[in-house]
Amino acid sequence: MSFTRIWVYLAEQPLLWLTLTVGVFWLAKQLYFKARQFPLLNPVLVSVSAIVLLLSATGTPYDEYFQGAQFVNFLLGPATVALAVPLAAQIDTLKRAVLPISIALFVGALTGILSTLVIGWSLGLNGQMLLSLLPRSITTPIAMGVSDQIGGSPQLTAVFVIVTGILGAAFGLPLLAALGLRDPVAGGFALGVSSHGIGTARAFEYDQQAGAFSGLAMGLNGALTALLVPLIVWLFGLG
Image (cartoon, rainbow, N blue to C red; front, side, top):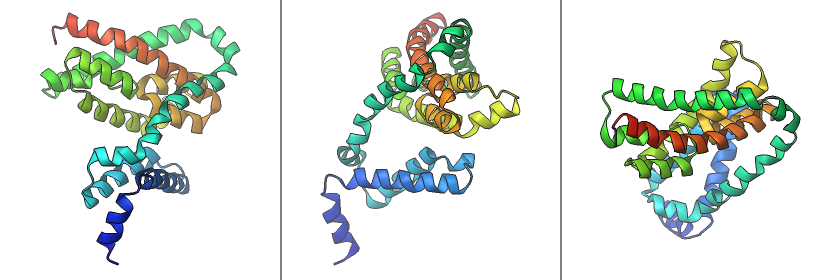
């Protein structure tokens, strides 16, 4: 039996793409740890690249892929809610840090939006492209909703969000270390504000406390940015 006929048979099976997605990510994780967590071998980056190449090589439409792999997408909801569990263990630290966390959240959210605006303008971006870029630092479902509300492209926004998360997860901790910031609470919160879920996953690899506060930052920044982005779009007349 030829490879083509085998592939056509396998492609009809509902669990094929789920199995391949999980398998590719597992292999990417092994490679990542074998390479001593080399930033450019981030498992999400490697997995996404591998799946894209596989879809292109087999001529598989994304919708067909998603039908098989959508269970992974379904698990994003429970996984996000589960971030409250490690945070509950840090409740005493959280109570002591309410004020600095509140300030850091506002400054981080505002900096993320305004820096994106400045970078976009410097690159000559405008219109829908610029609007799609503005919510890049928050988790994908919220970012896509915000993008649609302000006149951006939710599909483009999803790409920008993933790229932002991968870059934050790959280079966030080394950058913070280079700046001399080694406190897990501050470092984790910074990762959550700047690189949402992907950065939070990286924070958990570094330290449980960092991961807990990264998850907190991801949720709070999503809510705050959803309020700030439309306001900034209105103030600068971008809509």
